[in-house]
Length: 418
Image 1 (tube, rainbow, N blue to C red):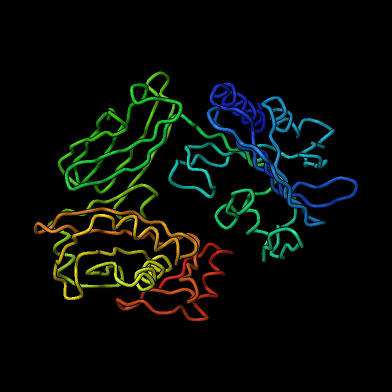
Image 2: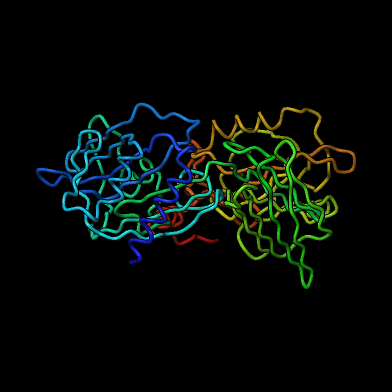
């Protein structure tokens, strides 16, 4: 059996195993006019969970290029998968006759719910039917009644949900097979314990078990994790240097989701390294830095949002509300800070940043900690002011060169550091 045939068999088995968890299949295509038909550039096939519905498929027709959505049944998806084995490789997608090239299927990667160049956040196997389609190019797409995109890669990310800068081989057919059983919502690494919060969808806590592996120096811990009300906790006695956690089905050991952590790696989405109070007090004592900012109160909304923008455009950081500029813990009296800050950021920051809130009691005074992640959609903009960056412990406007580098990063995937 050839590799191509073995991959098709693997896909068929996955579809058979998950047929009860899948409803319709959402087809999203970026196609080019090639009279009398259209030529496929990128098509994503994504099953919709049997619990969800997707309606009102759309078409964006720019003349020589179009983006179309359609909903297929499982039988129609199987026909698309068999395209390379047939002489007739024309498939109708929402009224467009689209020609697909006769290439081979290959498995690309398995992504957990916290990473990947896609907009969905479920554990997922990704397969690709390769193509010799020319490079996508950087030309703009313009039409009177449709959104304007300065770059075709941007429209693929917006319409289809694939980040070409992170998945440069996204041409042909991209088949995504998510496991909608359950997923990891948050994995919190504390000084002595690991706390895992999961989100159940098609499987309940009693049907799920977690498997944890931790290392520090010569210490190794292997523990099973059970869940109550979606939360499981394991006391390991140390903060690990390396951790690997998998969420599996009890019935057949199918992996539902996973996360890895290493002290020298960037944190995956949903992985949090907890700061104990004694470390937090030391952090406050050392004063403001490129990644730490103090606010006695929320203060002026625009100034607060400016710091969030700066952290998002730089390496991320922590804003501690309830500490003044002299590192004095003054505490907070009100309780609605999270909602207030969220409203400020939605009003002043574009796009909305990746962040999380945490309340702490230090020296009998309440603090609000706002962890701002380094953004994936730079530049982040302070509305009516533009992008800011963090340098030498302060916020400043980004230079023209830095702004150009942000857009270059979008196209190449290389990071900008200051």
